[in-house]
Image 1 (cartoon, rainbow, N blue to C red):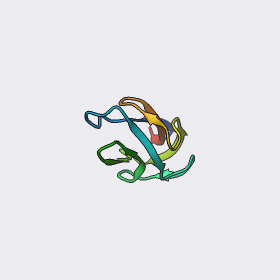
Image 2 (image 1 turned 180 degrees about the vertical axis):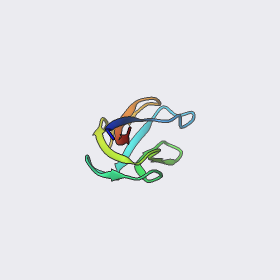
Image 3 (image 1 turned 30 degrees about the horizontal axis):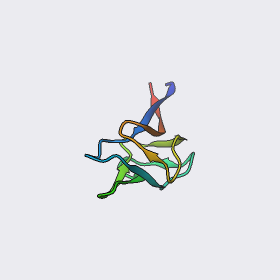
Image 4 (image 1 turned 90 degrees about the vertical axis):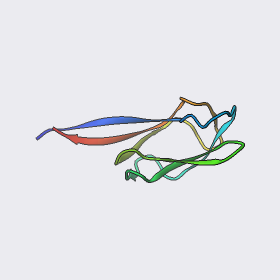
Length: 86
């Protein structure tokens, strides 16, 4: 049995009619194990706070935006990598 990895990019979702989305917190550090459904980071608009949950189990392999960054819909925040058995 061979093991390979699969990468999943964390992309800023559409949070409605807003010009400003701020990344206010990462809840994990590079290399940390993340389980599906755990809150990876928190995004805030002028109207509300939005937790971003992990869609998969994996390792936080990359952080592209730092705390305090102002981001737009569709921008990549980071990447989760998981091992997949073949």
